[in-house]
Image 1 (cartoon, one colour):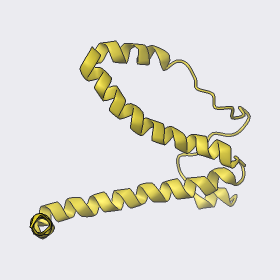
Image 2 (tube, rainbow, N blue to C red):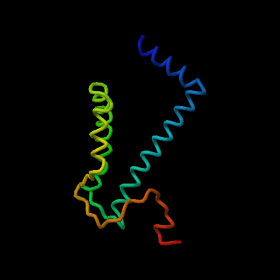
Image 3 (tube, rainbow, N blue to C red):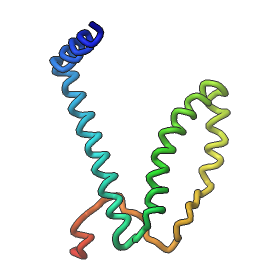
Image 4 (cartoon, helix red, strand yellow):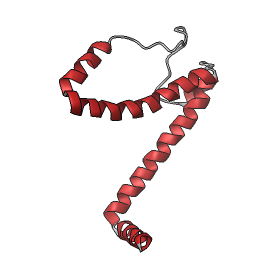
Length: 121
């Protein structure tokens, strides 16, 4: 009985054109996010970065830690107040986290332009 109600609700949601648009937008954005993560792995492993699997894993681990820290940060704000949590964070923004990466490597570009990669003007 409970499963039947669940499917009935889903049919109602999927028949609503406004909700259907939101579902499609969410699906497209999720796919773009996954594509960027997959592509950036190959980009960081290749020239000119030549990062190893460990360095690339640390970069992606920072994303996972961001998921955990955002939820725990919200709990801390609820418990201690916004300024008690944000002030130490703002002071720490001047510090740089070093994951053992070399400093002579170029920065990762925000765009992945294939013409610039191939050396075309």
